[in-house]
Image (cartoon, rainbow over all chains, first blue to last red; front, side, top):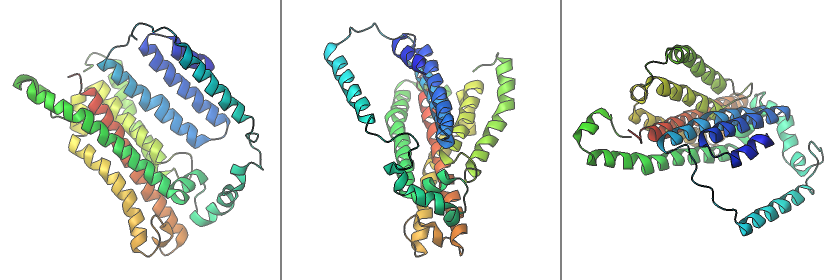
Length: 180
Length: 139
């Protein structure tokens, strides 16, 4: 996983980078399965390895698969990134151990979900009942965000596409189908 | 359009129904196993995108015209919000599924099913829309 991540940074051929990023997502999905988070792994595999690879490949088809000439390393941003990274890693030392029963996250609402969700919703998959019922507001927000993203893409790209089609003459207009 | 890639076309034709079926399984079995609206929507969209890649964008457009995509985009959000509002009308809180049916547990089940359906529809319509918009830029 580390190897694919590092290769993504250094390889200049963008096609290889896209494929490696998909591999990275797939490996992350395997990691989530090992951690028993099957739903998250499912999402990672479908979204990270599937759709985003496809969309990035689509973008490459529009642009080019060669990265522009390498810029020289800038010292101050590099130092800043290293500093932030070290602070974050230092911060993880205060976090509770993985799977610690006394961790704050496991003491707040989690016991109630584990004990009551089957009785209250009748669903064996707790992730679904938390996602759709207990945290319904959050999920609604997420759906609206996705909806907004689609609207944004339509406004930015779909509209421009239609205008350029109109401006570029009849012959192309005929076989290009309808505008987005 | 890839008219010459016979193997790709035959395999894709064979695979696409199963991809769509699997998406529906993930959608409606999300209550009992891993999965749910988000994953199902993405898998469903992947089936459509595979079809468009192999058989051409124009054919993909015929299967899923823009008006249908846009309608589905909003229908998903409306189903989700409508389920919430329906709970409000029946005397509960917004997104309170207990009041949807006589039995609170059955109400929860119905509410979660509807909400996941809304999520799935919006997500798949979004992914298909983004793909088509991107893909039609270079024509």
